[in-house]
Image (cartoon, rainbow, N blue to C red; front, side, top):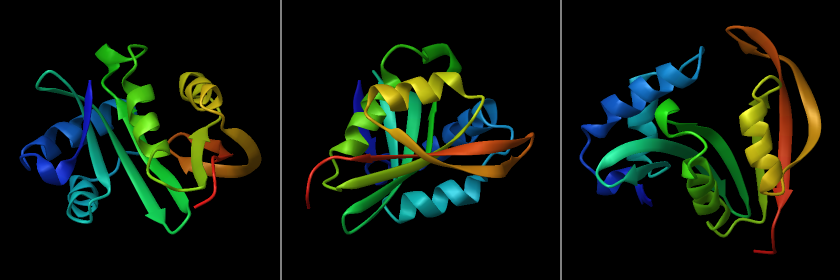
Amino acid sequence: MRVVNANDCDPQYLDAVADLERQSFADAWSAQSFAAERQAGRLWYAFEDERLVGYLVMWKIDCECEIANLAVDPACRRQGVGTALLTHALGCGATYFYLEVRISNIAARALYHKHGFVQYAVRKNYYRYPKEDALLLCREVSSC
């Protein structure tokens, strides 16, 4: 498994990312959103051989990093792809990491818990389709 910045890859993978987003989330980001994240250097891909199996969007400012979006190909879940992407993010040099997750997304919640994230709040009706609460999670690693 290798995790690489999208800017180091052919832009053609954006279509695969947008497709994976639609498979993973009811309230999917647009292809234009991913293109903007790629251009800003905030989009990362996970590859198994030459096949795109997941992606991550992370926003890092100073000592803080937000995991804005993470998805794994449904055929590749529970095979370490999410762990590889999350481990990459946790190695970015930030001290504090934040994310939101659907309350019903048990698999993602287990992944984040396994990597030391803890719940600090609930955002009521955060997700629109379907309407659902978000759990706000954070993790502190080390000083900047």
